[in-house]
Image (cartoon, rainbow, N blue to C red; front, side, top):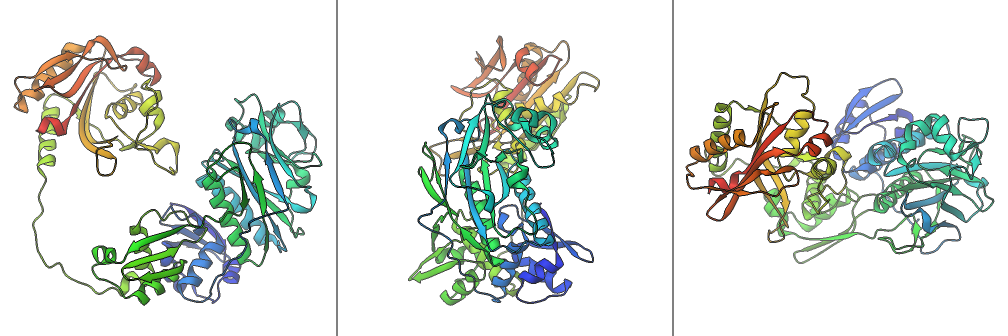
Length: 559
């Protein structure tokens, strides 16, 4: 979970009321946060939710507490329909690092604490939300040294030089990736392209080589600066606009004025070819009030709903008959369903303010038939000499497609994954077993492992467009493993499951050797498949030992 450090003096300056440490800890509950550590001048705060990046800053925490305690009414008017300042995007940047947004900040009073806060926020968002700058990188500059319009282009690495932050002499873009510490750390994001992204103004002064390093001339912000420019580049335009908004809201809360900037693209985006930053998402949602009864056990009064949702930052709240309509603040994009609204109502009301109600019916829990059958499968697998392993139901698209040498298809992917290692729901047990085998080369052979668990697949006929089912997978790794060995295990499982009349059909799976693999058929239905792994696939996983596998669809086997 995210952890942030905030200066006590800075947080107290943003809060409308002073609190002692115990009081602050209590009020942090409205932000799903808690005090992790306290020093003489610093609070270390742990956030128990990852989908509220607006709370990763001192200003965000203060705003939530002030709203929750009705200490301050917030009103913002920095969204504009036009701007005299522009960022012009070149068409050649599209396949390198396609998106940029930015805005100016005036009348900012930068002291040492605020400068450190800006740098911390810059790194926090770029590292966590921006996946180590791959998806989001943020630059902060001296506004008075920039001549608009700003240009965002792709150029040859040797064609331009500038003095990067932390250096005394000019380097070209290729030299920066080789010699500069930030180039060594983040250069891999762009180094494989023939051209590199560059941001420069109309005087041809470089702002940045994103996502690596700013220029020293424009990008070295100091405490004496009164006007700054904030720029973000990356691969997800929605996230860039969200983070830009969060920075804008925070700086307005500190008394700054926002200078909007228009961004012009030569290609289509989800927000047209031209838009103003900060961007007004103008998001609203409608909720049937009856859903509150279904989820919290009673139907709140309309005035109670308004009061508690106002405490969580919602505005323009209207209730007509059984319909609730409200506007979502521009620093939030985590509201995806009416359940999110009900949850915020509960937080606004306070968990401890609900009356305790005992269950009206008492029932005795027991394992479902599906779990009882899966336990039998485990017993059979252990009886055949296999050892059970457990892996995450979430995995990476690289494991699901690339290492299995499959074309990337539509899968159940995470919309905003925190890491590329866990960005898709697995659709097979086998990649997890291969990943386990890849880390076990030093263990004594033979290796015989199995796993039973859920997999997910797209199903357009399903109510939610997907289907979750249970599979069991086996892997045998040793020099003499073969089709016949796995056939004997299949025979055992089918015998124990009471399926005697199954047949085998030649299988065509890219991961298995043709002629040494088969599908398990029963009454015209495929119950699973097995065979010897293709050596090319094993090489993708860095596995040097022959492997054979079985995967059986438990839901179909149980029928």
